[in-house]
Image (cartoon, rainbow, N blue to C red; front, side, top):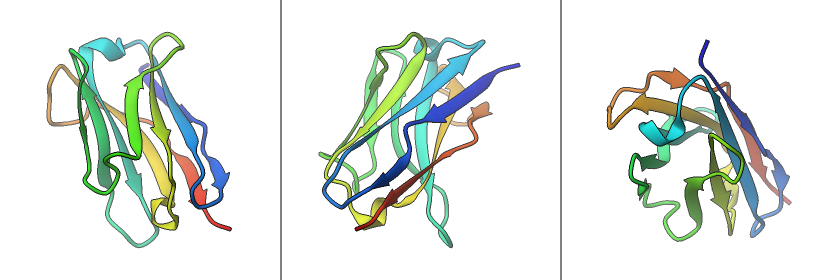
Length: 118
């Protein structure tokens, strides 16, 4: 069955960087719109960034200029480079995939925790 597996989360100090990776099995990330979401405690899940077939990218205003979504160096992966991290970036980060340019996600990962704190 299709799996999306996130990795790279952890604890980082404010101003630091982390690189998340989403490894997909049984689907081609280049043929899907791949999305990163996050959910902080007590808050709704929000879309952070996405990359569409053809490498068109979009970002939430809160992360523009700090986060970069890209095709990963490893095969069939999507990365999220997060720089200048702030405490408000603390959340569980989820990877999701939609077929083609679909608005509805067909697959979800289990999430990885990112904590930004001193």
